[in-house]
Image (tube, rainbow, N blue to C red; front, side):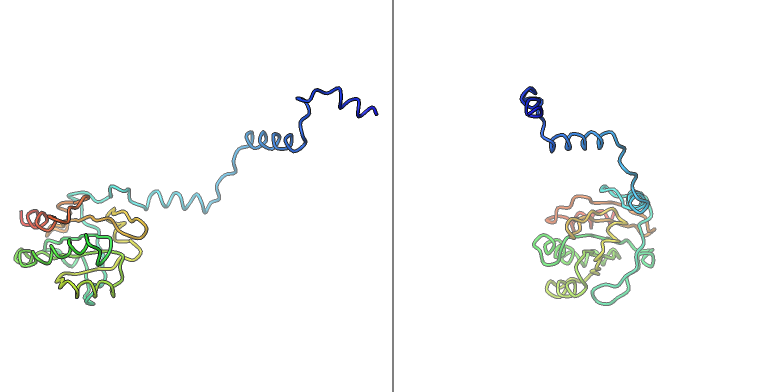
Length: 203
């Protein structure tokens, strides 16, 4: 009876359910507590990512030495950038074989191939597609230049080329005979890209 009387005396506004009280206490404690420090593995990963991953604008700049890479192309030939010193090189990254824009871009390089050859230019196309895909792509469109597979995006990262859902951005680098970057195209118009590159590499 006494307990009932006490309950009736308390105003309804002051009757706080136990669940709400517990929730309020938990929130208060959480807000007052400092968050636990990150584990060493998490901190190391964050630090490594900050220093290793190039920014979206790319670490490579005009005048710098182009990042070297050694791999095989779709025809099984060794391709080593350092071994190509003495020749101008065009390294172009593209999203995917057999897509409309990439086919148009590759075909434009093919159509201007005699002029590239005349100037001693080596052209290397790079995407995340497999070498089997590259072989088919080259055969279907009579592509006379190197196609290189970069499945993990390591070459692209070295050049600061972003990857979206496994597809590399469309970007091109002109590398002079001295091995240094001569020009960078971060935005590419496939309808006139080959002619632009040819004019720049020939200048």
